[in-house]
Image (cartoon, rainbow, N blue to C red):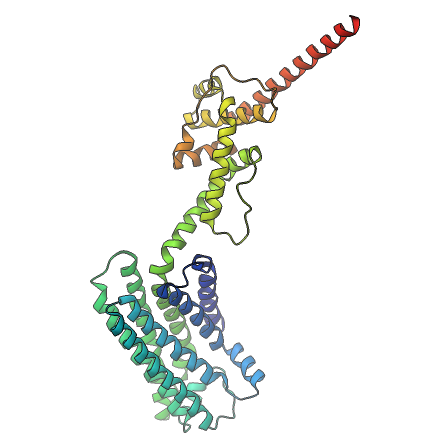
Length: 397
C-alpha cells in the first residue's frame, strides 16, 4: 500500500529532473520555473506522506506525529503554488496578477502558521502513521488543525476548478490539454476530500469509516497530484520533452550510419551523459554529413547501378557508401572510381534513417563491402608486386 505514495513521488521527481537541463537559461521565465517547482514540491509532499517516511521523520525529530503539520503544511503550500501558477498562467494586467498572487501567498501562509500553532497546542502522544486524521478527529486543537487543512485545501481545489473551467473554452492545443488534465486531477482530489470528510464525520458520530481515509484516500490523492502537476507542466515542458523523445529515437535509428562514418572525421565536440538528445542528434548528424563529404570522391555509381538491379534504391546507395568507406580507409593510394556517384538520401531526413537501416541489415550492402575490400586487397597486391619488380630491376641495373 505504501507504494501508492512513492510511485507518484518518483514520477514527479523524475519528470522534474529530466526537464532540468531544459531550464538552462530559462530560469528567468517565471512560468517555466514555477512549473518545475510544482513538480519538485509535489514529489516532496508525496514522499513525506508515505507512512514509512512519516515514521522516520518522527523518530529523527523525537516528536510524536511531527510529520502531521509538516505534510499538511506541504499540501497547503502546494495548493498555494497551484493557484499562483494558474493566476500567472492566465496572465492579465501585471498589477492585478501580482496582487492576486500576493493574496494567495498571504492566505496560505496564515493557514500554515495556524497548522503549526494548533499542532503545538494539541496533545497527541500516540504516533499514528496511517490513520491520524480519524484517530485524532475529536482531539482538541488537533481536530481544528485537520479541519483547517481540509477546508483550505477544498477552497483551493474549488478555486482552481473554477479558473480552469472558465478558461478551458478559450484555449487550444497543449494549453487546452493541460487544463483538461488539471480538471481531471481536481475531480480525483475532490473525491479524496469527500472520503476524508466522511471518515472524520463518521468518527464524530461514533462510527468507524476509517477505511475511507486509510484505504480509499491515498490512491485518489496520488492520482490527483500526478495529474494536476502534469497538467501544469505539459504546456511548459511538454514541447521540449516531445522534441527530445523524437531526437532520441532518431539518434538511435541513425546510429548504424554514424558508426560507419564516425572515424573519418574528428569528433565535432565532446558529448556528455547530461547532454540532451537534441544536442546529441545535432552532433551525430554533423559527423554523418562530414563522413559523407569525405566519402564523396570514392562513391562508385557502378556499384549503385549493379545493386539497384535487384534491390531498392536506398539499399543501392547504402552499398555505394559502404564500398566508398572501404576505399577511404585504404589510404591515399585507393583508386578513384571512373563514374563518381551521389548520395541523394542524406538530403532527406526519413531517407537518412532508411540508409542507416540498410547499412546495418542488408546482405547486399555487406556483399558490396566485402567486394570493395577484395578489390582494394587485389590492388595493393598488384602495387606490391609492381614495386617488387621495379626494385629487382633496379638491383640488376
